[in-house]
Image (cartoon, rainbow, N blue to C red; front, side):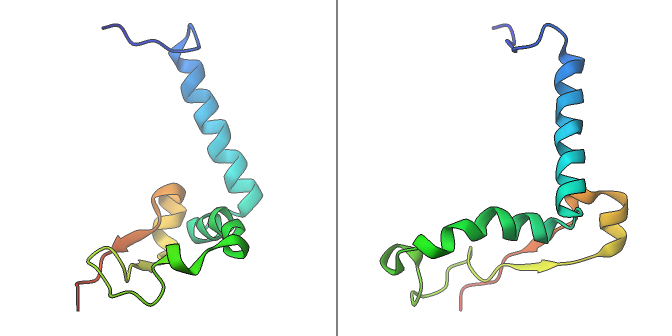
Length: 89
């Protein structure tokens, strides 16, 4: 099955992706934690406690910690966050 894309030149798609990365970097000053916070914070006002998982036992997918490493951000701004999953207690 052939790969279909909206552009006749796949290089244009790569260029558009880089443009979006640059836009996010200049708009949010590129720390990935800020982008994550701003992207998800809009839901806080409408969160429903019964659907949030608040007060429920932890699972292996909850308790995520994020390490902030400035050296990694300088080298790879969009791969800066390292996730480690906590174990079930």
